Image 1 (cartoon, rainbow, N blue to C red):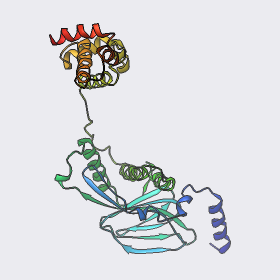
Image 2: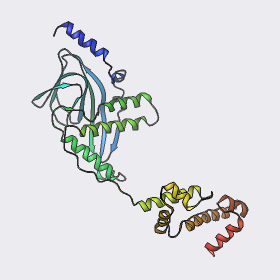
Image 3: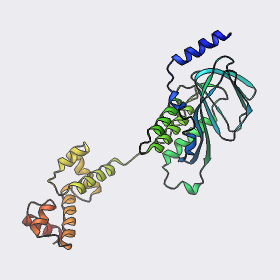
Image 4: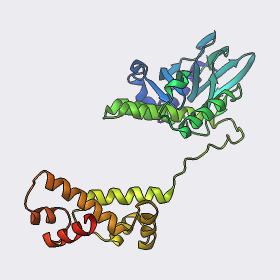
Length: 309
């Protein structure tokens, strides 16, 4: 290839839109955050997360890391030697080096090669630090790390589009909106998950999905709605409509978990609030009755006597 061909390659490179070009404005932006977070049973420390460009013929001599390093090729071509095997690199490929993988990278002699790099330290958490971590989250993180450790030692196609999440992370930093560090954390986890799904591996082990007792769940929703709105006119059907179930279903929910009917639960809650208002001397009976969902003081007196004797 002569100088004229090299210029043509450079011209075509400049003309073709490159979605990751914003990351070149401040290449070390994400590196400087020194981001640390936990996911499942692991602690993560992001050492590098950036876009870099290898000029034509640039070689990074053999080296290895004790951490995980993900390499994605969004543009250009080159070669990587993993262990003793050499592999061609081109747009759309990625490979994982580390922990402990000896490798050498080289750009094409006539064409630059861009690389999105995620260099991340992963450490298992001590069991004493896992209190409150949901079991499903631990299972997902564990399955992800096992899948990453099983990735073949060769470049793979980025079928999960993991590299797009580099730009998501950078945009979150650039926008600097509330919660941007959480957004970056989620982007990093997406890179890990989508990389783990690559390589044409067999389907990962099924994660035990969280389940809930729907009757108990509906009772909690209904009782919360009553607490929030007890002072307003309310019927069984009003609450059932909020939960998208029938009135008959909701009545069964209260019989199973509310120790009685919907009406008795509502009246008892209203009375508990009335008693609190009476103890605090917040006003005359008629006013208290109106403020707590009773039609008038006489009806309040009737319900109070019926329930308390």
